Image (cartoon, rainbow, N blue to C red; front, side, top):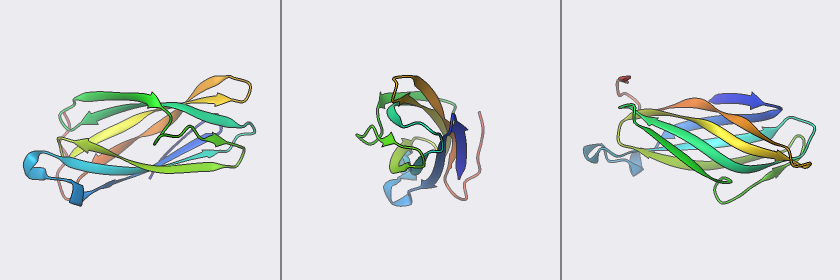
Length: 130
């Protein structure tokens, strides 16, 4: 489990390798990750957009930007949480992901909430960093 907190917004990520969706002979490795976003602050916030930086085991960077997460732009009051699970295919048995969520307060102020860097690793495969 990986965790970051920005301005009272806690982001926890739990990744896992999905063997049944992977095909190592075809250089396809699929990872799922579950994210829990918790508002530990005093103000209501809305998740507006996401920005991911995905790096495979060869060091190739892919950036992904988009509105919301899994088709939603959740509003979180103080003490509320939102969880979702998504996935990421890689051409290598390991990699990393990190990023930010753009959050907005009720008065229209925007800020970036950190998504912690986390590792994507196939179990029992030696990791080689480039």
